[in-house]
Length: 443
Image (cartoon, rainbow, N blue to C red):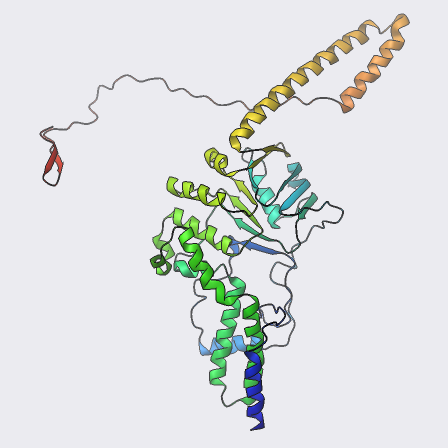
């Protein structure tokens, strides 16, 4: 009787605790789980498989339960300990978003980034432009923490910043339903739900083992408090709210992902990262493999989002519609232009023209100075020649204007061809119409 009173008290306690402190999800083998300092939301590394929603066998459940109740400590989440973090100490702060300061990066002795500095803040949509191989995707990977720069600082508005990275390939699981695909965005929440299901199933089987039941009730207490902390009850509500915004109808929730086109799969991928409520959104070629209607929808949708974004795209019209700032990377050095892509093209052309004029003027001055030194090189004017020589050396060492680089544009013209002597198509006695209405008769 006393044992049952203790169990009743534990059951009562497990249903309370409205203001309980945060407890990380015990989906790892121990309750002493340490949260990683930064969270990187990356679709291509989703850990939920297509069978995650399936019911486990009794043997697997008992094995999972033993691990769940284990008292052994564990290490950090995968990748959290192995990824080296670059310190922001000494770097300037930023109120929102991310700032890159003098970033450099080389691969096998080849310098890709030499001096890259720019920032993105809330409400801004930055477009990264440059030729293939200029290091645009490398910058995204450095921001996301997937690669470390050789030099410089990545300054974030907060340490535990959630950064969502939509890569060029929209990785979704074809065997899932649309709802299951969106649920895969809630890894922590689904981990709590899985543990809750396991503990509740084990409680139903542990009616004869009072010691095990007591331990299970303790675990249930922790999990119920944790489900409140991660807002588990709002998962379905968030999905139901987002689906219409992405263009899905309620009936689509139970359709297989495989039945949708590439454009709709892109919407699923984007929806998954938006469900994670990121602090920064990185989009690498989001318009690849999608139709015009989806691109136009994406343009309109991104305009409504306030989250800071960094976008890589070869679609100039897309950059024109979405971006508020353009960052060009050329020869490993970045340059920032305010406005959209068309504004960047105009500003770049003006800068190149101004830079070329300044360079040509300086080259004339240098040539004039050299001629003057040559004339004054001997006799009474040698002192002045020496002075001019020192000025020239200082200029060549410190103040040379760099000649602007302009890539040659390839222009191809195909000559007009005369009419072929061969018959390409012949139509005889064609009759065509709709229903009872004839459109073409005996053509």
